Length: 285
Image (cartoon, rainbow, N blue to C red):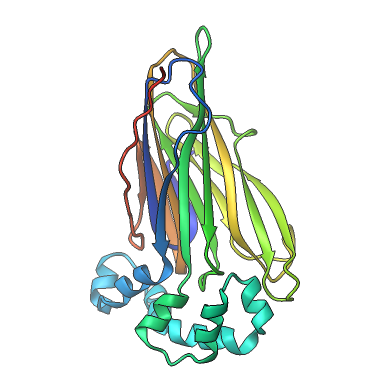
């Protein structure tokens, strides 16, 4: 299988990098989370600040550039406000104060930023151990949106790890929790997704649709939050490991490309915004 994996959509990308050392035997469960918050508005503003020639040189198609120029947070907010009751907006994650802003929306930058969806992304080690000839590492991860994003494509949760490790494809899952944001009843539904594809010894990724398509998830439901576990193993005894987690959120139309060049690298084409957090070190007593 080629190391280049084609995905739908340009993305902004949140990168969580976790360094784990000395995982020799029976390390504690529940390490401290590494968490970062991102805003949906910043990446689109970055794209809009470039002229068409700049965007073309960076690899964006005419269709993708047109979708960037056509999108307006102000227009999207007005449309969502008109189409939904206060109860529906509440089910989409908006607070009472935010709903008041929407009902009296004037289109200021301050108002737009107050209403832009924000996501919290976390990664932490759950457990590590070793047997006579194999090392094991279990990682937990989660995400949550403050409100329903204005871009509702398929999000990507990608992982890369130290050389020689492999993922257990059947056990590693992400559980996406979907909320009914249109019917005003606050119902929810949880769907599990297995690893979508992987490069043995290098990395893997999950795909999570943000909106229900009428199949697994009913129309009108959106993925407000999710959590998952990835199980890694290596057929050798080692005392350290590194894991990299990147969360990609689709922003505009078109195709994104992701590859796993090796080591801890996860490469996306232009249309991504990468934010790194500091490494954390883990040691067994």
